[in-house]
Length: 78
Image 1: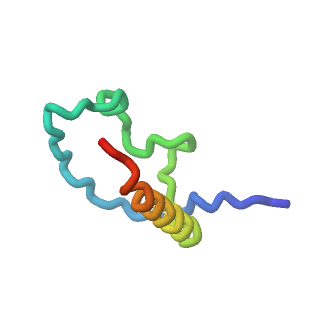
Image 2 (image 1 turned 120 degrees about the vertical axis):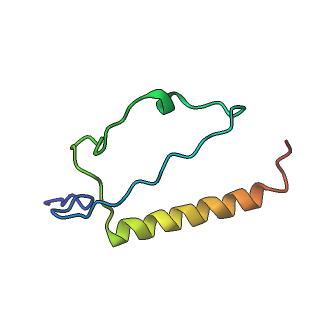
């Protein structure tokens, strides 16, 4: 069975990158914040473009996560 790579396409349009926002000093930055990552820093060197199905599945996953967090809200204490 031939599997097609659904995340790469031949054509894409580059957009504008918004300016970096500042993070308050009291918030610790993760290690990757200090690492330079050039544009198109993916294993293939190409940007990953999601298909409509992949975007749909990501939304389903995010909705499940959101519902799970909401369900836990009443039992978690900080």
